[in-house]
Length: 257
Image (cartoon, rainbow, N blue to C red; front, side, top):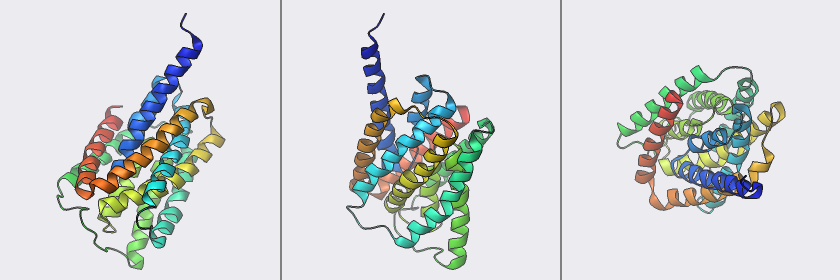
């Protein structure tokens, strides 16, 4: 019979490596950590609801790691910070409250199709997100932007992966941010606050595998910091290409499960 301590050590090493890779890619391209991390948790034996709650808690560390790196650069604009938080957090809490009550297969397929559309749209728009353009900053523009962010927040609370990618592209397409700046807002506000709120709600309503969190959190912190650093160093064109590849992978994963 294999040594129990050895098996636990291997298990935690797998968790750390999967978390590091998932969160590095997510921090570089603006979302999608669940593409790798959540399936690993399920593969290692967690039920879906427990895996989702554990994943959400771990991704808060992604936000912390990315925040530590991004805040060394130019500060975030307070108006956008408030808009993303006030519009998105109620949707996150509502989505997290409902996900444990309904089957998610149809919703995941629909989200997968939409995510594939995001990647194709960005791919077919070669200049999108490469330069900053101040768009829709008036009251009606911000109201529409907030309504969409609320909807994305609902998806973030209720589904597994890819919703950070929605926020990134929405900030680029609707408000005219470049990819590097949009990724910074997504990682700091979605990774830290949206996922934090969803984790608390899922933790209250369900259960979390606490003994797996040290390895997951360590991988998320390091991956978030390194991915954010790569995003800052490599610039918009490289982030855009990584975003497009990851959205296609996430979309395919959601559709074919």
